[in-house]
Length: 191
Length: 191
DNA sequence: AAGAATACTTAACCTAGATTAAGAAATTAT
DNA sequence: ATAATTTCTTAATCTAGGTTAAGTATTCTT
Image (cartoon, rainbow over all chains, first blue to last red):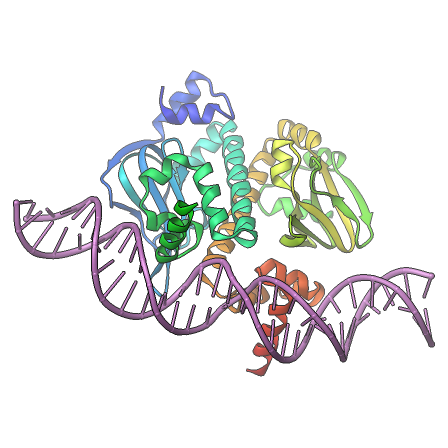
């Protein structure tokens, strides 16, 4: 059974016919590491679901500094929600970090799916609400925790990612420079 | 026409009967400034919509330091999404800052509304998606902008709030101490 | 396998914003 | 109106994390 159907079944149950309709509206593609699925300035046409591999979304501020918004590995959704819902140029990049198999749902198909299978409206509501909660938590963490505490939390929350993702990306995600991250790691190892 | 119906009509259109059903499931109450609608450790039973007045949501970390997550004035929604969806004890407080008239929807009523008026599923999906986008933006701003830039952005985005909300709450929202905020303000006035 | 490119480390120095403390101004309560 | 409380300001000092720079390790390319 497709991973994405399993993911949907966590929150709503589709009939076999509905699953069939759903599968007819999605497309699965393979991408090599370093592929850029979306660039800053482009209008996002699709939402992505990761079957395998790892992706990240990030922006680049004028000083050429990257900030990682999100990682996504097996079973996670990723996209540029701002550009996707407004259909205006966004400022996120989405990049493949490890060779990946990605399910793509275009905006048009998603709208059609909402008409044909109203239950999906609920699924994506729940998905957005959960994502909102984790963003709120991360926001509060950035305001109240030290870099060290944020790093520890990251390790607990995403134990698989720390092994697979390069250190500078983790540094960017928790909001410090690679140099400081390195210093902090050395300090933690001494304890 | 009720402000909350106008708010809903921005994204979905309800029939008069549906509006009637909706209104039968909500409750409007008045609260004095300083009322605490929800405390940390409690399970959130309701989502709130502000007819008038101002509220804020915030948490308090162990050091007795408050961090403002959100302000809400006329026409805005506010709640503790984490606790509301998980029905576990949350760590947010929701406080009335200015005498307010608040519309309350309990979780049970909201679930019933989803059954009876599926269009509301869409409305709250869109609401969650928009909220997600603004949290993502704020998160990136906290990672890449200086306190001064965040303050300027806040002023542009919420011009009415700066006049009405006490300075220490704005400081907390943008993520600096009241003392530093004061210093920064003095510096900006000299320019 | 060698060279090029990228990722990581270390160290000296710097700065945005925190902390502490004390006084002034504004609100709130009586 | 006045006292009490809260909010805001100013200033001195401190620190988490940034910056710059140079060297080392690792990965990628051919």
